[in-house]
Amino acid sequence: MKKNGKFFMMGIILFLLIPIFGFSVDQYEERDLLIGVLEETGATFLEGDISLGGTILDRFIGYEEIKDIGNNLRNNLEIKGNLIESGSLYEGVEGDYYWEEIVEEEGFLQLMIQGLDSYNNIVTITLSSYEDVDLGPGETTLFINLINKEQFVEINDIIVKVEKIFDEYGKPVNITTCVIGTFDGYMDLRENEKRILGVARAIKGKIVEEYKEDGVLSLSIFTPYIEEYVFTGNKKMNMNIAVRFNEYEDRTYIWIGTPIITVGY
Image (cartoon, rainbow, N blue to C red; front, side, top):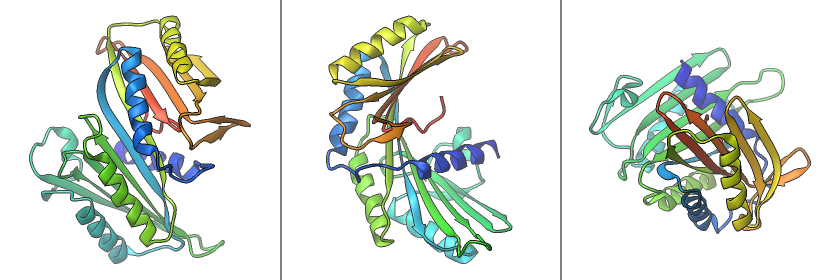
């Protein structure tokens, strides 16, 4: 259930995002920018993470309908293989497999599907339907997470597919992108901050918020090179960079996201 909670919280974060512009035509270039920022810091690329989501229906749906939508999504996103027991994909199972899980509670129904697509991206689909007896018919949300370990191979095509899915429902889609990299060994916060400030200057970035605590450094940045932005307080931001040392692995992680980081660090 810990894994389910993680993806559920990710969905809430994405749902609360309020972009000022719609999805930018320059999103592909924005991902190149994130990779460029990562390389500028000297970090080694580990993986890319893209999350797409929003409301697709302004009503609660039942078991059969959520299963039908899930099957259509799985086919559209070309998730391959045979169904296996829930959670096995993260436990070292290799080959063409996917898992799915349904959670049913009073006024709430959630379907999760996870597997590999034809490009070997790890794809997680989360369909959640809520019934609101007091305020109305409820709503149904869709969130899709893609993890890629080869620097966004064919990711642009997948984003187009997801956009078309939301277009079919007549709904907008929120998109966040994050690249994750590592440095060998320990780097203190002062050295990390120096690196990030240097990168921010290179992209004409303005630091709008800074957080330092318990070995974590997080900077919220606004750069003119990215069109879409969100607000933190009354300030605009469209890039988030965070750094943390992992003592068990003896390496330092860096997350670079736009407009914010929605993966845990």
